Length: 458
Image (cartoon, rainbow, N blue to C red):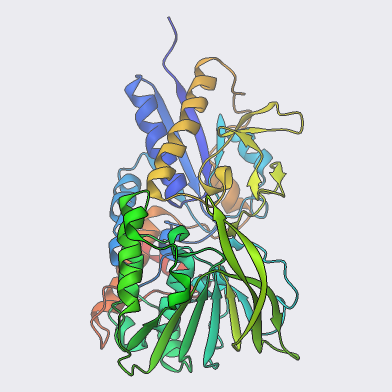
């Protein structure tokens, strides 16, 4: 008879992927009569990853996922250890010495490259950096240059739509959200009047979701501008699914809108493939090649080129994973090298006790539902390997917190997060605009509040 499992597992990354993996692993082992101890490491002082630092502040419905993530961590079966970076404060090998298995769930937070001439001109930015700024990420500059009237957003996914909406939206309409004070001040001083969103494909191949698209047309004092020439193949009746049918109906309804004389405009351009960013020392325009569909979502260039004057460019063409020091990394795909969540070496042999889940496993695609099923696959392999005796037993005893304390790493805890959470909510309650919370931005301030609050709660 097989003995019940008794596991110690480290998870690197406290976004949805890491938290779901911990919850699924706990349930799987406990349901089989075993026990598991999980430490969840996060490089930021606070949990939730891209839910806290990658979702636009005016999307409270999406941020509602935080409630379920909070419940999972608050259950006490997973220990949160924040402000600790693997590869800087502790090595991957040191985790292997202390845990039966290590799961990498570090996500993808860098912008994918757009390899065209001029993309590095001053005034050209990655969307991920802008998102990090307006979400109050502690490791980006506090200020953002919003002193240009005409800007371009290249991409046809939800991130492109979020960036375009935040750029076009008036700051007064963001006041009720949890937006940080420095971000609100920056947006209040914005000179933006026209935001142009460009996609290589047509309306029938957009990567938005209906709720994101619908919200775009409800932004106060912003006119939506679309172009009839882009809609030859945008018949809702021919859409292959209901989601696309809804979005095509929305887009087509905007064709009949009259200008309201709004102070800002959001232009949607389809069948525009970026060729070059133009400018003498700074962004002045973008040159595009007009495309036509060839079937199954593919397009080809027509040889017709257009130049559209803009003074800033934001590329929103996808995210790219950050290598984890000590783990194999596929530079082409931007993921940790793995097979169904088992991290593998150069010969495709599984590395004992090392796993991956989320975007660092499969790339930056899919929504929260995909993250859950993705974690289930990884955890199934981990449990199978543990049951078959394919994990190496920990070789070093003792609590990892003792090692971090010895190195004077100012780690944060779940109690610390509860203290920081309460502090941000109190700032919101006392704010002149009565907000749910006001984010604390500086890392050192987050750490100070968390560590002091943890002492008070303990």
